[in-house]
Length: 81
Image (cartoon, rainbow, N blue to C red; front, side, top):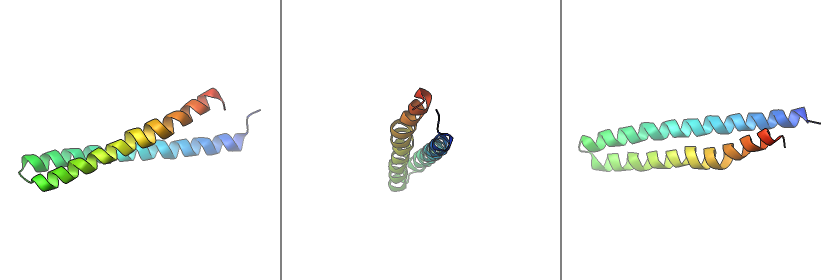
């Protein structure tokens, strides 16, 4: 028998992780674009910082939240555990 409150909590947690992963990834893309624009405009220090922070945000969004958090939760829900 399925425990409805536990499933609801799991779905809310999954939604929060997915939204966080999407937000971090979007911020990463924006920072990458800003960094490349800054580098092409001649501001190497600002561009390097923005590219580095963009890579960090993309790592957090895709790997830390997406691959390591959201994917196992989705698999657990799909398996009915």
